[in-house]
Image (cartoon, rainbow, N blue to C red; front, top):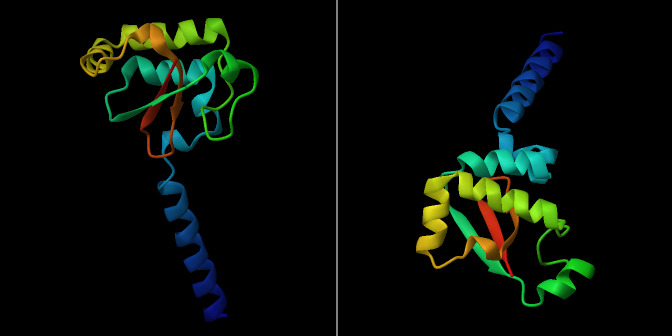
Length: 119
């Protein structure tokens, strides 16, 4: 009986530690438009930039290694507006030579970092 209770106690500890390590970025909806826009409006961490070589073609047939599903035109405008509302982030992007009008997508990773996709 003592072994069973020790095993149950150990399983409970492992489960608790597993849930404690889950961050907001692990949420399934983190890259959906409204959630991503909320994140971008206050984002202050590191970011990566990737370029889409053929943006017009990317909208029709995205490559597996490129951004997740391309945003609609209104989705792109919403992402750009969220970045613009976050003055420190907009300034950091501009200081790297990035025109906010070229940002066509953003994708948050599980570690909380964001990749911006440019045309």
